[in-house]
Amino acid sequence: MAKKTESYTEAVEKLRRIVSDIERGDLDVDVLSENVKEATRLIQLCKDKLYKVDEEVKKVLEELDE
Image 1: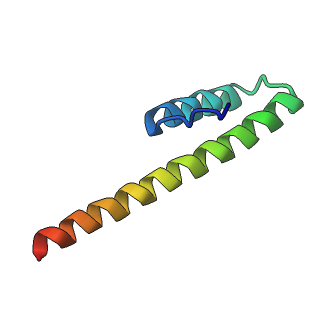
Image 2: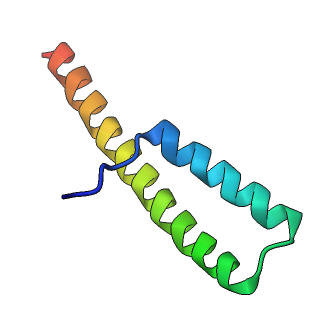
């Protein structure tokens, strides 16, 4: 079964938790590595979602100008 993709809000909240954990500085190196990988995935997910929304908004605005 495919994993449900997080919403933008869920991804941002996970990123905030990861950053908070990293800033505390008490993470094991292996956990830090996994957190960085997860943060990278979440950042890409947010970037993709923002790009998609931007394109959709541009399309709607262009249609309004016609």
